[in-house]
Amino acid sequence: MCDGYDPAGLPAADAVEVVPLDPQTETAGPAARLTGGDAARVADLWRRLPPGEERRCHDPAFTLRFLAGGRVLAEGSVCWECHNIHVTRGDGHATYEFDADSPTALQLLDECRRVAGG
Image (cartoon, rainbow, N blue to C red; front, side):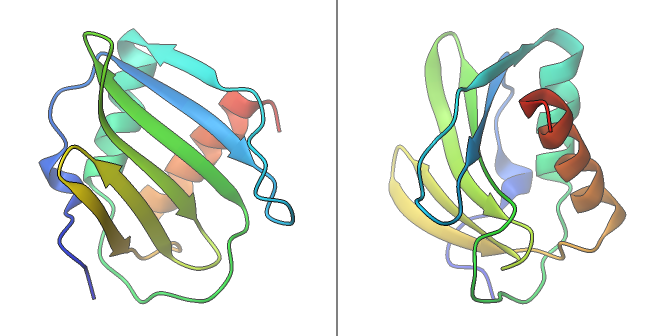
């Protein structure tokens, strides 16, 4: 079930920040900034995440921040184990449950791990 957020509606982004999160402490690691084709690839994977069922943890966890002209379009804390994204955007907070086992979700996880160096 989705709570008012659809990743497919993400506007064009010219940068994406990938922030690894420690699932035990919820502490953010250093952000890696993507631009150009790398940002477009991650934004495209985000838009294509299929709906799924939510679980109850947060591992592996990353925050993705989508920007255009220096302005944050959307920020989502993503968990592939929980199958959910907690999204913050201009009009408030929402959640999105996605199929974390789908090829698109696994590609997005690979991109986040690659960018975060792990």
